[in-house]
Image 1 (cartoon, rainbow, N blue to C red):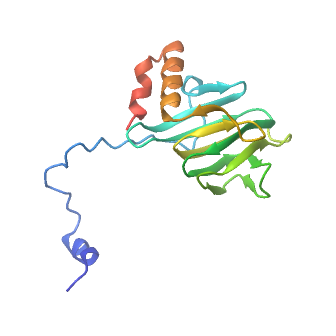
Image 2: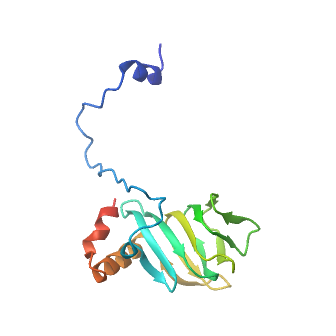
Length: 179
């Protein structure tokens, strides 16, 4: 009996003709995401010299995907993850004080749930841009691990809506990223 993959190859280039499945959201395609020269209004301020550019805000599954842009050296944050994080460094470099590895341009890092670390951008890096896929929340902590703040898909969405409203794009500009 032929495999399902070989049967599909023999069918040729035929699109699916059945009814769509219920409650499936629309695809989301953002062109030129690696260009990194987005319009400045699309970058949402997060802290002084730190911005994020949302790509997916999954309120239904509790994750977000964004580009993080940092234009300062030093400590960015100390945090714990409630879920897994994937990070692909597109420009510059960064590391965690608690680990001996460096996230350099073109590298990918996996960070497990429960990991606590302190993100630092070195002095010789003018700009760091990293694509982060964050499931769950960042729980910001002090050096002893006591919680001092939380960031998740809902706070990202709230901040994006407020920023886009303030720069003339309208709060609903953020809605295109919601899934």
